[in-house]
Length: 114
Image 1 (tube, rainbow, N blue to C red):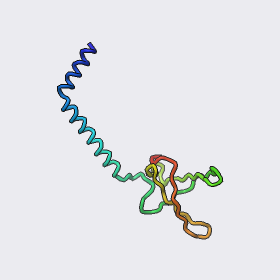
Image 2 (cartoon, rainbow, N blue to C red):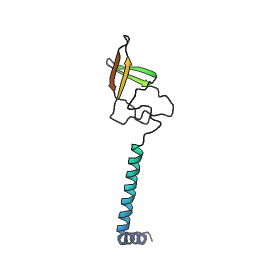
Image 3 (cartoon, rainbow, N blue to C red):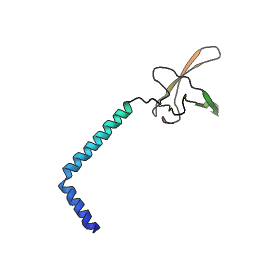
Image 4 (cartoon, helix red, strand yellow):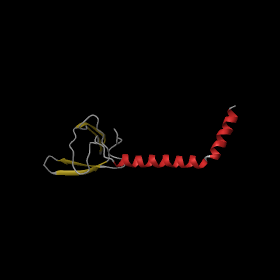
């Protein structure tokens, strides 16, 4: 019986291949357009903004080597994410002991949704 069911399915597919192909393409197109819409919509739970500096508390500092440090900053709200895509960096603004502003680019080592 399973072999005859497989044959019937194949025969049904051969008779309706245009319908199957068009339906598949529509599903793929709708999925793609939905992903574009979701990706372009700014999330309210993102902690950083492109146009302004945001202050974050330093939670932990670890010396990894003589010239590398790992800094862990807290986000303003527990449900927020950093919201930075992989491969992007953030500009950090700090003030040194003499009151001079220092700006440097840094690359986060956690994923955007963590």
